[in-house]
Length: 97
Length: 431
Image (cartoon, rainbow over all chains, first blue to last red; front, side, top):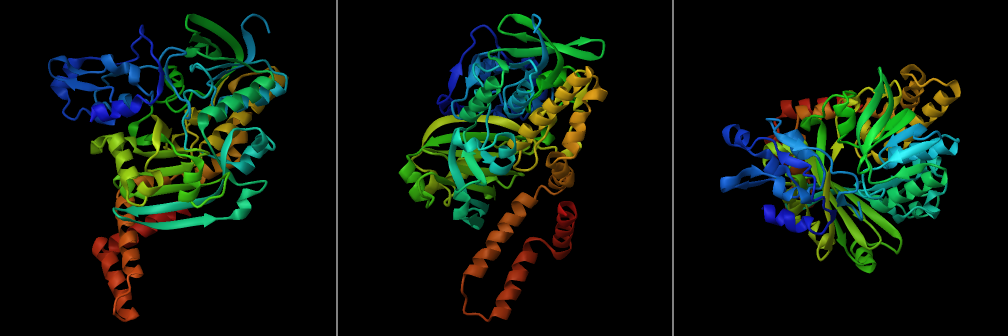
């Protein structure tokens, strides 16, 4: 499912910021211990949140494809999503909007 | 201006911020707009319809220069079930002539045009500048610190905060409470390339005119939400979304929403073959009147989506009007040399006396109605379609008997006391 979302997201124009990760899981162990639903995974339009075996739940690798909607932060029941806006000039660049 | 001091700093080059910048700088105020995107319009998203009469008040004869896509002459509303839709609509050829009623626009080019208007009036626009925090002198807001990309401080007599629905700066500064998932909707949008003749034949249109369709029911899995189709010149805008709390609780992904919508048998023939140009998402504040935060502070005003000014399908023109009112308040404050919350409260009065707040106030119970009765989006589209199917089908049966069949079918879906309660509640809220 994440792959389908990613494929669509790749139609967008992004200016990736290699030096600043603007969306991340604060503490992976919280997801493992407390969270059953992983709402961040299902709600993210671009599939940034990945639940991968030994790495646990993470977003760091895929933050570059974030479309900056801000939903993940609001749906996490444990306030465990770190989300700020990308630095000026970085992130998604809508051509249509 | 002296060094980095302006009459007014505007946070965010969207419709609220740019209208504010345009109005204020036209009156000779020094205005700086800070935009985090590399260019205006790169972070914005909308359906989108631009309403002609309200927009003309702000930008007379705007259609002669603004990048509008099509003149909308046809607006339809589809209440959907799995393989059908009850359709309401209005097509008026007179809407194709001045002064028009609504246009379809793509927000990226439209916001760029608004930025040009603001620049022509004298506003300075700095892009790739993300505002990180507000600067204060006691309780008074005196400027902002931004990453451009290095940290830089800018000072002004008044800051107009028009940073959009996520309003991270206003929230982290303690100006407004944190947004809750129950008070916003998540919308995803796909832009599909489709050549103009194909669009015109599919939607039965002449060149230059367009149609829009709003949908609810099956296409959003019966969740409290909507979908829409907008015809552009040579593309379609496909948007679908639902209340964020309801959507995340359901476990349905935004892409599943989009696929359900595009795969509906009445929608598919309109959109198929379109090549994806863009796929993105945004939040829409839907808490309504009761969730509008405080909007006037010492040295600062909150405008547009950041102030939760969205009423049903209207957001863009509310944003532009709130920007205009914010600018008028700053202009008056400058004349008095007083930028206190009390002096700036003209903004609140202008909002209150306009359609912006009057309509939101009239609809103030709608968000609670949808929270109280979320099944309205599921049950009644289903019922409407069932009844329409029965009505459309001609049975070898007397009319009297058919009327009883219709009634029996409706009551089998929702017993009379509950049906009556729904109707009463909805009527009470809407009137």
